[in-house]
Image (cartoon, rainbow, N blue to C red; front, side, top):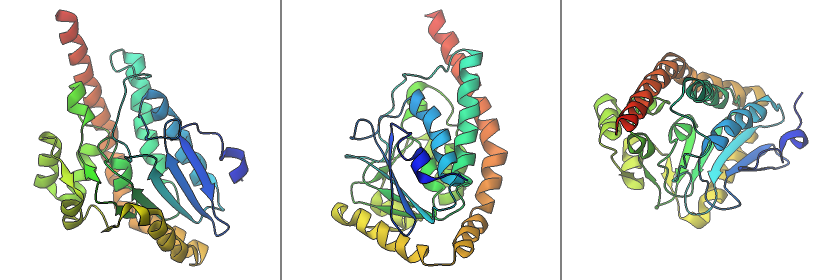
Length: 255
């Protein structure tokens, strides 16, 4: 059985704390500030979500960010999109990180401290989403790199906000602010930044009082459809992303 002490300091880009009631907080960061997502983080988060999901003493998980954003910056360091072996690593990690996130068998609360323009699909797999007024959503990196957004963005956004609206969001790199996100059902509520974690902890504390199996199985029941969507779409989407990356590499080589 996994114990909190065995993994709480194992992840350089996630500060983990847990209350006596079993509310685990995971604050994503780079050197204590806003997270810069790169290939090393991509690999790390596969194991991060796995370890959290294996610890039966976790009753609720709060996922939040450090600094001015949840995830708003990506760096190519550690990614190899342009060789078969390099992309195979991305492909495998991309499928596993979402599967491991869904395999966290307790309710999850996303507490968004600001812009969420990179890997917003993590948020869409949480059960309750609280945001600050500065929160905006966008799929910024895929088209910036010239590749297909096949890592769950392509299937989860149309599921959450509707087929046409979701596809428009992806294809136009649309920016959705907090008020619009609330109207569309992407987030549960908007709170001032100074109240963000207080509100998340308040909700988590209420859930933690439920019988353990009630809370756990409610998460399982509520995410069953999302599991099916992720299972059916992400492997295929990642393959298409890899083909597009190969085409980008070919075009760069021709220059």
